[in-house]
Image (cartoon, rainbow, N blue to C red):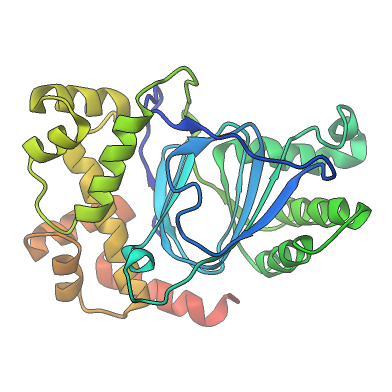
Amino acid sequence: MIVISFGWPNYKMKPQLLKVTNDVVHSFSVRRDTVPYINNHWHYHPEVELIYFKKGSGTQFIGDSIQRFQSGDVVLVGSYLPHYWRFDDIYFKEGIKTSADVSVVHFNENFWGDHFLNLPENKPLKSILENAKRGIQVKGKAKDYVKELLSGLLNAEGPKKIILLIEALIAIAQCKHEQLSSIVFQHKLEDIDKDRINAIYEYSMSNFKNTIPLGKIAEIANISPTSFCRFFKSRTRKTYTQFLNEIRVGNACKLLIENDANVKQVYYESGFNNVASFHKLFKSITGKSPLKYQKEFLEESKVVPR
C-alpha cells in the first residue's frame, strides 16, 4: 500500500468545517452510505470518525498523507483532522452499476462523560484516540473483528451500541495499525482557501492521466500562473508537478495490485510520458520498483486475511 507524506508543517490547504448531524435520542452517530459522493470534499469536524469501506475504492487524503483506499479498509480519524475520500471515476459514470457501501461512526471524545477516559482502566482508549489525531489505518487480523463490530453497530440500540464502539476502539488499540499523517502536520482552522483547494483537487483527480498545463490549473484556481505557483508551493511545501506525480503513482499502484497489469500499460494509463521517468518517480515515492511493489503485494495478499 502506498503512503505519500506531503510534509506540510505549516499546512494551509483550507478544509471545510463539517456539521455532523445527531438526533436527540442517540449520543453518537452511526450511518451507512451507499453512494460515493457523501461529504466528497476536503473537510474536518470535532467528532472522531471511524469508517469501514465494505465496498469502495479511490484516493484517500488524511492530514498530509495520500494513499489508495479499497474495499475492506478500516480507518480511524481523530477530531479536527482534515480528510477526504475521493472515489474512483467509475463510481460516477452513468449506466455503470458500481455502488459504494460504507459504515461511518462519528462521536465526540467525551460523549461518555468528562472523566471516563481518565479512568486508569481506559488508558488504551485514551491513547488510541490521541494517536487518531494523525489518522490510523487499521491493519492485521483484528481488522476483520472491527468490521464485524461496525456492522453490528448499525442496528444496535441502548447500552449495546456504546459497548460495541468501545470494543472496536479496544481492538484497534491492541491490533497492528499505521499512523497516516506526519508528526509535523498542523491544521490552522482559520484558513479560508477551501474552495480553491477543492477545485484544484477535483480537477487534478479527474485529469491526471492527461497533460495539465500550468495555465489551465491556474485558471481552475482562478489566479494567474505565477500566483498559482507561489500559492501552491506556500500551502503544500512542494510544486504542483510533485503533487500531480504523487497522484499518478498512486493510480499506478492501484493498477498494479488490482488489474495485474504490465508496466507499459500502467505508466501509460497513469499519465506518464515514458517508462524511464515512471520507474524513477515510482521508486522515489514508494521506495520500490513497480515490479517489486506488485510482487510483494500479491505475495502478501495470499497470506493476509481480507
